[in-house]
Image 1 (cartoon, rainbow, N blue to C red):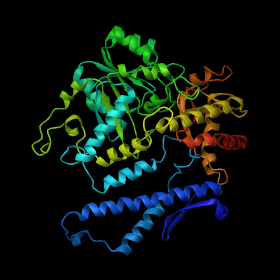
Image 2: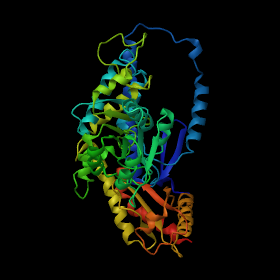
Image 3: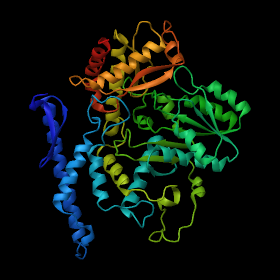
Image 4: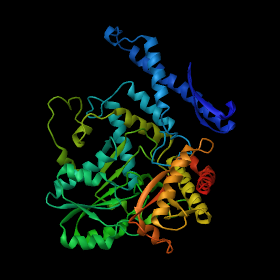
Length: 489
């Protein structure tokens, strides 16, 4: 049991519970942040009440009334159940692509949620509809689009669905191709759309193999190629410029799935703390781009975005609605979206965030991404000299893959050791750490470690998405904990 001064407590009244053991000075900073957050929540509630009071007074219907004691009891049960969660907020959670939204996003979301606008039509959300158009334009500018058509979605899955839906409308008889390292959503959405899909093999770095695509194009009628900028498994960047060169000869469309990696466009300067400049600067030539603000945009789930370079694709969305689109002749977002009802609160949250953390390379959101990148680079450097853990691939963004050294050094023993470390790291009450596992082709390991024996087609390795800027200060502690667990064979 940790001493009381080393445990953070959050909550109020008697809904107080310990969250995570951390150092006292960090605990104090967290508590101060929580106190400031609470005062701003009260400001939001006061302003909302003032707005409601500007309308004629009415009585709440008795059917909506709830006894305060009952509500208190339900909230106690709710918060007790919410303890069954991993500490996504803490740097010692270094596993999946999960992190808390920024306080600015929460404040923006709550402010609009109390009104509950629907961004399908300006009739349902005039203010948040305008905010959505503003933030989508900012994202389009970040990627270098001079013109665009786009909107927010409930996430990358729906955003990619819309991109592939337009691809089908433009080339109804042609296939859609994607890498075997792309997100599974592309195959699934092709099935939903009834479109033939073609899987392209990847190279030994987990990127789409351009030569394999060339070969497929000889026998397959491919209308769209999906390019992944930041694969979910490895954080790999497909060879975009080479694929654009191939497009010049073969004429297929290019859709970029940058759900994870898109915001790294801000720091694509080729510097030691940046990412590949050439690939990200080529993005404006893509026909469509997907990015997820609920990942590196610091937003709550779910918030995705689809952008098209050619606004004329809006013709495919055209429909008639006899009960909406009455209050304005301006574009209603429901006229260019497959989703109908969409939360205006998501637009308000992103708008608020980009006002305080703008899309700039060295300040705002760019500064946040540089810290994540620093964490990945520092972790990779430490893994290179570790005696117990080996780096699998050079990180291109902030996802790092690695694995334990074993004797014998082969797929089955590495897989078993990876599983043990994954399990024991989060079970150790004194040094608890959360990472994730990843199954990779054994050839990826063998390509870098010649003495590795691929006695099975697949090898389980370890993976960390270092997507919180605080990870930059914690990677040494993370590695020490991992080595401690790896040593306890």
